[in-house]
Length: 259
Image (cartoon, rainbow, N blue to C red):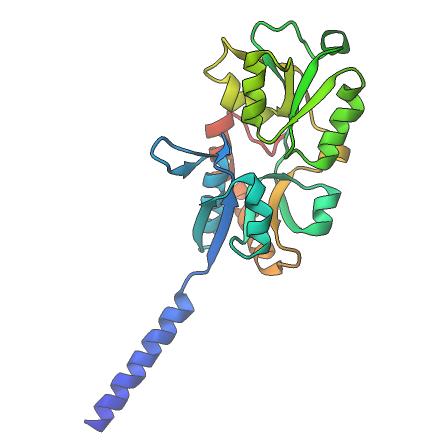
């Protein structure tokens, strides 16, 4: 009987050790729930979007559990620094300033910026049609991105900053601003697609690495080499196996790494 108890005890210990060995790591991801098409909530409150699906694909590629949290932009950095989340996957530009403060992986998007105007607007992106007008931008744009706006459009336009792009769009509808300069991918999906009678994109698409960075990447706490390595591996895998292209085509009709 003593031998049987000993064997049973050993088997139990081995089972617990096996379960511990096979327990998956959990990657805690944060993203803004008001940033369609990258991250937004369905009518029943479920988080979805391009960044949500990319995050899920990344976790699947490295076989970890994904815990994706809806975190407003204003609280995102504190949530990362406090350990509430491990990474922010939400179109953060890989600027020099941000790379000095955080560990970043990517780019996973090479974004372009463009003007959004009313459908009946005569604005075509030229200085002649923009001179003396009011331009709306989002404060969450990178500091260098905003600097480019002020150095260029600010020469002949009044620049108005907003906490959220949605607020700028409301003012565009009300006629309080004449144009919005922002992420072309987001604005095309959220405000032009299906709303062609209200809005259109104007002017040229702009990708200016010296101001906007080489692209957008995943933000981690400085020195987090574990998740940086795993996310780098995961990104390479979903690009290679076609999952990235599948998700990108679903939301934008093109590959966002191919700009």
